[in-house]
Length: 213
Image (cartoon, rainbow, N blue to C red):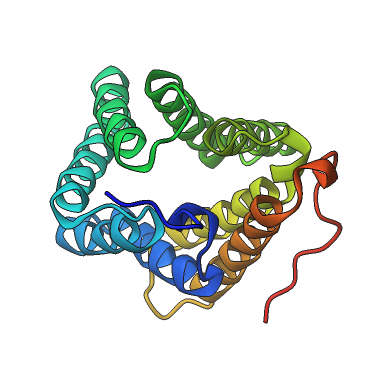
């Protein structure tokens, strides 16, 4: 695959990506797997920049890992991690990434675990642990300092908090919590994009603000 000046993961529309990911979360919690797969296909193609054959394979790995993780408490985290490792190997091969796919898969499933704990406890301590887990994933994925991705992780965790409330209230498609979740995801992606596009010498701390257009 011919590389362009900006990898897709380093240049994207935060609002559009957040919109699609929000729909993916809705599909996941309502166990609407076909809708989940459609959203995964979009993210793999537009955000990750994979060619169509790899888009289909990568989306299948994501769906497979998610379905292995989804049952509670009878899920299979080891098999889910292995499916995510196959996804990250595919991503590394096509986008010439520097990360270790096994470590990325471990960090991915780790934040899933922390998030599930937070869903059940809803404590401030577990929210901090979730932010830490998300920041570790972003830092590894993009080779950025933890502080540079902290804002993106905090807003993503906030989005998950809104999502958790929505799930506890019955997954109503007309709930205003969906809009709150989507807005937090937009802020998360705005913060991540700012960190990705900042000169490396300025990445000693997170961006001061993340505003939406």
